[in-house]
Length: 133
Image (tube, rainbow, N blue to C red):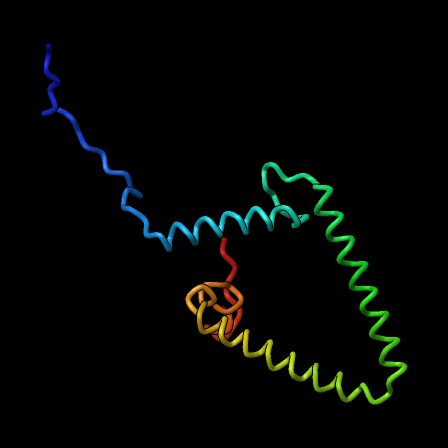
């Protein structure tokens, strides 16, 4: 029985050979799922297997019809209840403040990613960023 000479063997360490935490694996898995979901609906997506899926078209069509029906029902309700303008005004203000709060929390949590975006880099520098050649 011949023995294997291991003295000339070179151990190659891959750049991504460190074990990943469970949180990193969880985030990567959900990022892949959300990316696939986005590619299913995005008409400008350049995914290799992107094709118009009948369920996506049906779902978007139903959503547009439901949104139109809600707008019509809301308009009829407002016409029949003249004092409802006050309710609508209060609801819109509440939604506005809620959206501003969500935007502020997202800006605080994602400030590193937002700082690298060209739109916000322009605000930091005080002027338009020069075009890259």
